[in-house]
Amino acid sequence: MTDILTQIQNVVDSRKGANPEESYVAQLLHKGGDKILKKVIEEAGEVLMASKDGDKEHIVYETADLWFHSMILLAHHGLRAEDVIAELARRQGLSGLAEKAARTE
Image (cartoon, rainbow, N blue to C red):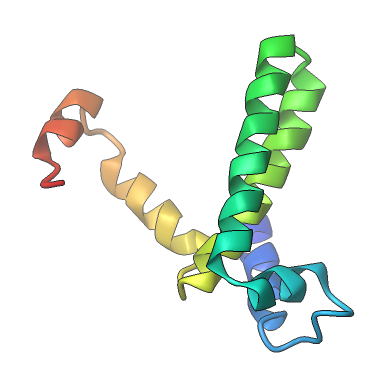
């Protein structure tokens, strides 16, 4: 499962220096954080609407878009999908309530 995320993240990272006229990812990265955030928000809204409609295939499709754009956001900040996977692994086996209570934010 993580192999495909790593492969996609590698492609995203490789587009950082690409020509924005030739790459959608390079275009978003070139436009900066605000544009990337708008795309993540847009995709999150589409996931919510798909969920509300109850169409499982559409939910999966829109969630894939959200994950992809989240990976672009991670790359913008010098992070990778593996960083998120490591955090999920760290949380594995922890009570959600205990994990939330332990946060310092």
